[in-house]
Image 1: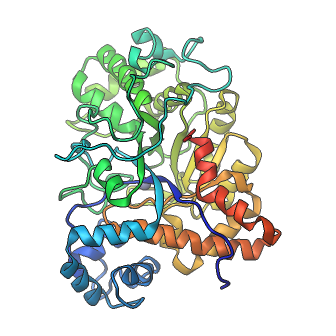
Image 2: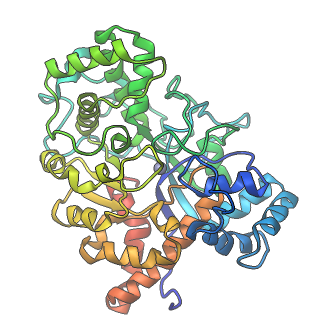
Image 3: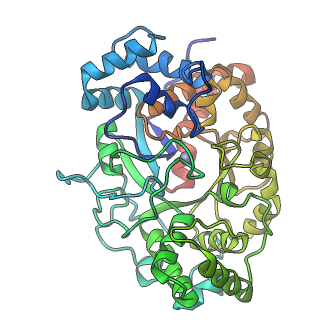
Length: 456
Ligand SMILES: [Zn+2]
């Protein structure tokens, strides 16, 4: 392993989640957050005995003043002595992340800033334009838009409210942003019990700016909760919710890989298909039921595409809600082709073990990007190999950094350190001219995300 030969700019973490305000400090409860599984470890085993468990001990123990690889018991004892606020501060500052793009779909709850309420630092989005290429909100548009005469007024291009600075400085949340769920992606894992930092509190603790990424399925489920069995009200409410989310977010995200799988028909559904599917879902949906209908999923995806904001898609491994063979990003090939003319950026999240398939899509489709968040943390010492394999085909301008941290602030530090470590190894393997290491590293760390999400 060679020493780093580059200085990274503050990282742009383009996919992450909120963390617990009070992390459990006994080994049994703490280690539950070191797995994508909702189940306790098998009898006689520990989730600390994994690549991620080793990575936490390697990178986080020194941030608390302990030697690397301190035992879990020593680590948690020191964390208890420091207290939650100081431990949070040390872990997040050590991660050196400058910007957070927070998936606010989970856990549900109040997203507003705490009682202090002062704005978090962030980047002004007022200069950002909306829509890409010839695809605009004033064009022929997609079928659902007409139900409410287009996006809600506050969602139209150029109509963003003055003073909406994009980061979580705006304390007004979407009411009831999705139902409460456990788990990070497919809603079935580790458990969302406990209290959670708001994105603004998270950003303040990290000394970072923060932007919102809105989860599409949560918008639809919330709209269904409000509409009852009224199909027209549901579709109109959903269109308004997407318009509002568009005005306050830098991207949309979908977990259709969990709910149905990525083997979707590529085209948007017709109005008749959509109405029939929506009516059936509302009539058969149990209270708080999740959206997994593939027609409605396509409607969500194409509604997001029409907004012109980047669309993040979960692909690859995750919790047991997932059927892995349906999460191969190659299944999205026809959808990727169909979206191409709109210019809407697609960001394939996680990707492992299909990272080479994702790299191919990024290599041949200008609007496709690849992310290895979650992956680099979970594969531990193999992170450099996985990033190298991704960069075999993916252009350097198409790979984005994220931590996918969730629950534990430790996962922010692990994600950031694993990325830096993997990047050094990948550049060593791929051997671009030494003089260009700095520039290429900066692309992956921050510059690519700034370009894709228009973070100026
Ligand atoms: Zn995630």
